[in-house]
Image (cartoon, rainbow, N blue to C red; front, side):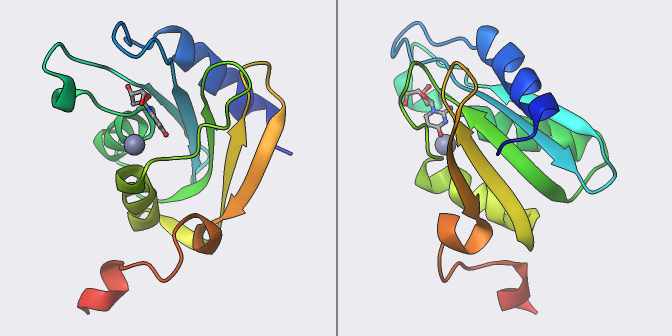
Length: 132
Ligand SMILES: O=c1ccn([C@H]2C[C@H](O)[C@@H](CO)O2)c(=O)[nH]1
Ligand SMILES: [Zn+2]
C-alpha cells in the first residue's frame, strides 16, 4: 500500500496542478533516501508540448534540494484513472531510483491501484551504469 504521508503530499500537490487544457490534474510525491519528501504537479502550457509532468517536476525539485535518490514515489491522477508515469517520466524516475525503489499509483481518493518495482516500471532500462 502507498505510504500515507506521500499519499497526502501527492494529493495536495495535485490540487495545485495547472492543467487547463487536458483538465487532467496530476500530483507526485517522493521520499528520498534521507527521508525528505518532495512533491510536484503537472504544469501545462498554451504551447502544448511545453507542458511538464508532475513526476518530472518533483524530480527537478529533488535535485534542487540537494537530494539524489528516490526510495519511493506516489503518483495520483484524476478520478479512478491509474496515472502510470509516461515513458519520459519512467526514464527520469529510473535515473534516481535503485532496484529496491517502489513506485505507487493511486486514485484521487487515495486508494493504491498499482505498486511497481523499478524493473516493472521500466524493464531492461538504460541507466547511469550503462555509461561506466
Ligand atoms: O504520469 C503522468 C501522466 C500525465 N501527466 C500529465 C501530462 C499532461 O499535463 C496531463 C495529460 O496527459 O497529465 C503527468 O503529469 N504525469
Ligand atoms: Zn511524464
